[in-house]
Image (tube, rainbow, N blue to C red; front, side, top):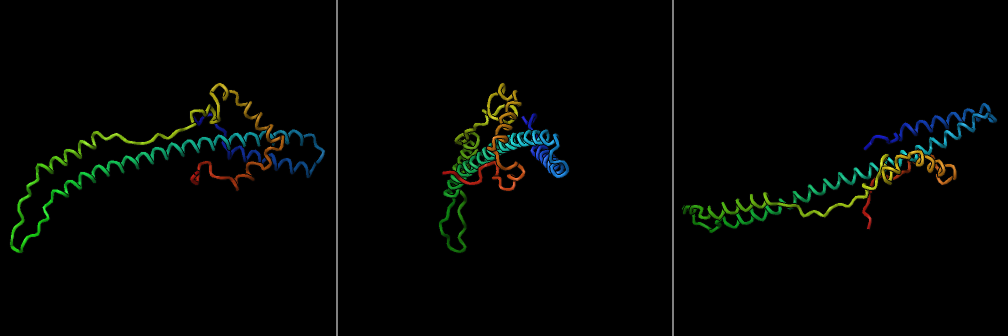
Length: 196
């Protein structure tokens, strides 16, 4: 699934190198025709960076949700089994004789061994027949196509279209900050607070 993903760090390094080259060239030769080419490369690199960030965010959110689905399901299963065992333990405790005795008088023999065996058998049967009562977690990850982007696999085979759209966003000014400037203020790619 991770095949075909862009590496955000490599793309960000590429963008930084191009920006450095542009700055050096503007300082040395402000009218150089190479400036136009470098600026086009910068737009392309920034578009790749946008795609890489989106891919990373999509995969991170998906894996975060999957992990917490498994984690919370395990917690629920353990808790439900503990409830079952605690209920059977209460039945066992109820079989204990707590009648007060006088000093020197012996405690009578335990008379409820058959009932205790039945409690243990019920506990074993309960654990054997246990089925979790977990509500399923709904996921939209099935809509993720190749390259960790939304859409069908056929649509994602056309990755140049994704880059073209990203380039158009960068050129139109829709994306103001470069991805590396934005990274310092970026939110985590997974939910960090409850949504009401």
